[in-house]
Image (cartoon, rainbow, N blue to C red):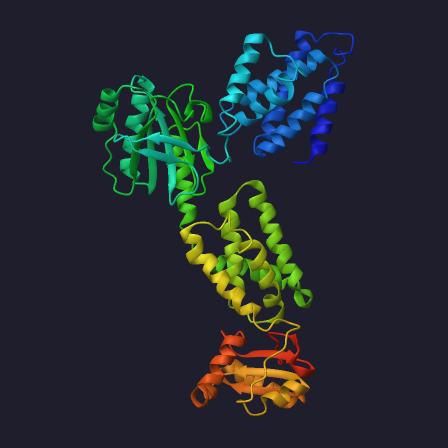
Length: 479
């Protein structure tokens, strides 16, 4: 959303309340009208990212013409985001406390409410949505140390409860039932906040016994509160539930069982993803075909950058991986000069250059391994390098000195046959290598060629200059 929109809205507030002059205090009628407009602003901001909400709310508060109106707007912003049902919105309330109330730039209704706002901020700022989960060292029933936080192989649920809490008992029943029914492949850290070992044992035995094999429950506690879990995770009351992804990032907080189910259903279904489907390939075909003969390597990189802006820049790491992975799978079978020229920098920047994002076993299996293999092939005999001298292949070194088109092909390949015919009638200097024939007659030289050139797909045509300097790769003489 453009900042201009909110500047204009702020000006509407300024001009819309003639009673709010510098010398006058706002009356109840003006404030009531202001409330309605503020609610419109909040509704407009609802789909935006947290940082956008914080920035635009700052602009809104600054736009006030009098200290009284500024204080009123700041309190309304705080109240709205403190009580918002939208997960993660409490970060805006903390931002307003830190930016406006704590430094004295705006006044809370009372010292007691200011103290409450500061406590809320201090006990929640470490565990906001999108942050790396604070690390904890707590204990299992045998007294062994259990570490929570950082990367892990599966999603993790942190469920803080108290054995004396009636609401915790109800939430535990709901959570146990849902986990047994859905059998999510997740690890659940059931965190007892009490200090009575007998009550904890009874709870583990009677209330939180799961039969879902895919779900593992790890019972932990910290009766001496050495881990400072209360402040790190804002556990001022129970129950309290968080969801961590495999990187250790908080992707759900302040949830009940229903909210947990909705988030896990979305995340797990999105992870069961097949790259390079027909729809994604058709999408990229249509996109790149629209460039016609003007398509170049930079267009591929710009496309990858646009995908990043639409996904990762907005906090959607999983969709970023899906789209960039689809682009990789789209490029792998391509053998033309333009697509291959764009593939190498794309792989280096958006896949191999992002180890913090492509960090799961599934990523390695489906994407990173393929990217490494393709990157290695594309790196062979780059433009500007020289093809090697090979005395064992008759005529090779003579061709290398003079330059021309080096054409690798294989028996039974119709495209290879067309390229060979095109070379023969073109009048260009060329040197052809039948890899099938060479593999039978001289396997050592054939292996040297396989190690030197990208012969993962044939035909391969390379244009060279004098002394074997590579000028172009993945050329077609049919064009």
